[in-house]
Image 1 (cartoon, helix red, strand yellow):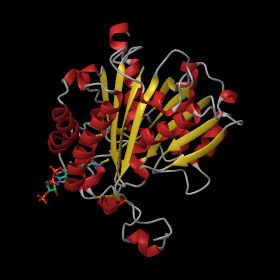
Image 2 (cartoon, helix red, strand yellow):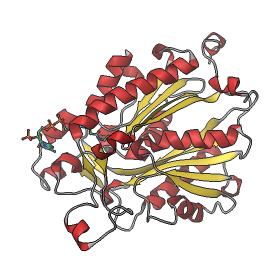
Image 3 (cartoon, helix red, strand yellow):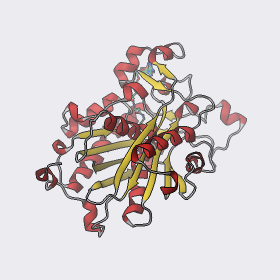
Length: 345
Ligand code: COA
């Protein structure tokens, strides 16, 4: 990054007494299952068309995990790829945080399964649940541990097997989602600004807009709960859409304000990959140029907590993000939840 740009933004962490300590994303990695389910394949399952799905969402295909491939398997593969790229050994990892709404099982945590699978036996491990916003929430939690000097190396993962909670007879939802995982390794890196800020928000008054009612303490699994479809994801698409646009716009503005930068200084914007029309509407309100925005939802659909993590890895691989660039992540999900993060790469 040129020195002239470097002076044009500040690290909001500095005012909280974190001088000298920064939290960087040292490496990223991702994994998607091999099996591709195209819009044409879906035409054979439900009353839909490639044209409807493409024009309403921008999605052309999604990946579906094998029956014996679980969220922790995808998470571990993404993590190992990030570890190889970052030159990080399993024993160096202090903490594993997995963001997911499709854990392998209610307990133990998917993070503990990942710990076993990657051999990071020294690490503490836990899951967080903030639906599609989970990866930014997990990044923010992880960076707090780095900034407070509690830990030096943290593995943050967003991973989902959404195909396991989709009603494959409901055309309103089954066309939207896919499976996959993305991972980031957080480290203190001297002389780098790293994660400049992350804002998070939630509105539990709108919890009903997007949910899976069955399987928890409110509605444990029974024959009736299964036959009534309560273990499938449910969504009010139109309301979710409106809330997504407003929340992502507001979160992005807040993150930019905290860093005292404007949108034109962002080299790459990585929005939650839910719907092309949501991304375009948020982009229009923010005044972004199309080339600033990274989109891969045409290939993978909405992978919830994995979405921005996979996109971040692909953007780095495709050299859409280079060292010194300012990157904006912006997310939205069930809860409702939302968030945005600014990173100096
Ligand atoms: N194929 C064909 N028709 C479909 C369809 C499909 N896959 N899914 C829904 N339809 C139908 C509806 O039944 C409705 O028919 P009707 O008018 O006869 O009732 C019609 O298409 C229009 O539905 P509508 O809800 O108005 O479409 P929309 O433009 O709002 O698009 C979504 C629907 C789901 C794509 C859109 O609302 C959306 O993306 N919402 C946000 C979803 C999201 O991102 N969720 C995750 C957030 S993290």
